[in-house]
Amino acid sequence: MNALLAVIAAKPTVWEKILAVPRDTWVNLLVGLVLLYMMSRIWKSLKEIHDIVPWVAFVTIGGILLLYWTYERTEPRLLTPLIDKLAEVFPSKLQYKGDK
Image 1 (tube, rainbow, N blue to C red):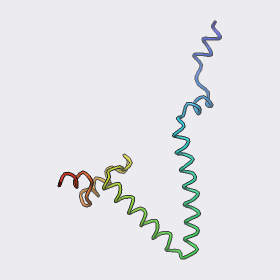
Image 2 (cartoon, rainbow, N blue to C red):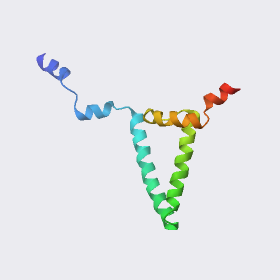
Image 3 (cartoon, helix red, strand yellow):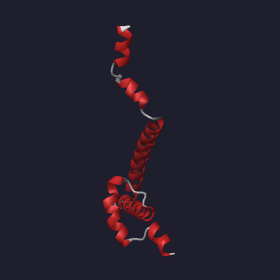
Image 4 (cartoon, rainbow, N blue to C red):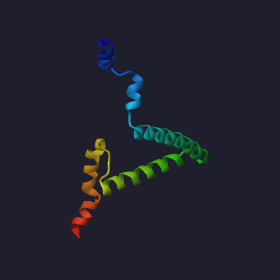
């Protein structure tokens, strides 16, 4: 009986902790790794055209993402102070619907 209680009260192993992680987390991690690989391949391909082309693409996509986050207010919590400052200048969906 004491052995059974000892097994029940034992700390979970590393493998048990890994198994307890939700499946969505692993899927997100895998998608992130695939995106990093694809981004590195695209960066190298654009760099073959000219050294400035990947930077132009990076700034364009980053600007579009910031404007989307500002309009929809779907930014990560870490970037909320930055997006709050941008929301003073750029319109957001909440302001747009409030004006109508």
